[in-house]
Structure formats: C-alpha cells, structure tokens
Length: 222
Image (tube, rainbow, N blue to C red):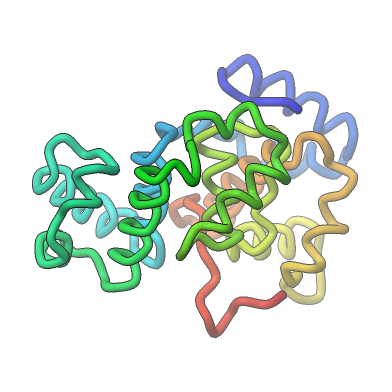
C-alpha cells in the first residue's frame, strides 16, 4: 500500500509510471509535471469534496467560505447540530445537506473514523466510505486520492480523466467507467499518479481548470 505525501514521492512515482508505460512520456511532455494537490483529511476534507460537487471552482470556493463563516469551528459536531436553514443560506443544496449531516452523524455514532482510513487497504477504505449515505464511488475515490494520498486510487468515473484518456490515446470515443478499469491496469500501483497526470493533461489540451469532474446522472455510465 503506497502513498503520495510529498513532492519527492510524486517525482519518484512519475518516473516509475512512465517507465511502466512509455506512452505516458508524451502525456507528461504536453502536460508538464502535475501538482501534488492535497486536501486536509478527516471530516473537513470529505465535506469539501461534497460541497464542490457539480460546482465551478469559484462557486465551490464561495460556498465553502460561507460555510466556514457560519460554522466556526467547522467540525462534524457543528454540522450535525446546525439548522438546515443555516446550511441552506451558506449555499448547500438539500442533497448535500443530507449527505453532510449523515456523515457527521456516522462519525458521532462511531460508525466510521475518517482519521484511521489512511491505514486501511484502499478497497476496504473505499467500501467504508461508500457505505455512508450520499457518498458514491467518485467521492470516495477523490477522498482516497487527494485527502489520504493513496497512490493507487483510481476515479474511473471522472469525466475529465475519461476525456483526457480519449485524447491522449487517440480513442474513438470517451471510455466508460468500466473501460477505464482495464485501461489503467498496467499503471498499478500508481494509478493515482496517472490520475494527477491526466488531469494536468486535460487542463493543457482543453485550457480548463484541471479539477476532477464528477459524472452527472445523465452522463454516469457503469
């Protein structure tokens, strides 16, 4: 079980990844070195991912700032006890409020300890996260990758990764979530590093922010 915690970790993993799949050398040359992009872990990190879903970077930042101002300190207990109207005024939708309150309640009840997931195998950690109300595979994958630094986390349903793979490997169509699994098999145990590289490549070729893009209900494919 590997982790990417530092810039040197990232450099070493990139070298191994390109050695394992020389096609990625051209991707790296176009994209440039990907940023480490780490978020805090625990409830704050998971909540920030939930808040940012289906929002632009600027909109997510504004909501997060209002949420932090409304709930000081920002903690699972303050979210658990907060009035729904307070969370709505901060800009949270009803589904996001239900998710954050469900996660906060699960932590309060001892059903999950987000701070210990870094010591759990990725598959087990993923299963524990997706058992929480409102936490789907994409959210769990992004948490494992950006908050815990799991080197092999692979958000196969991410639209930006799918589109980056289509362009990078001259595919006839954007690969589905299922197709992204076999496509990345040769990158184990560094699929999380490949994800960082492909997000940076996406920004380079699309001239857009290289943030993860969660599939919507209309685009989600199994």
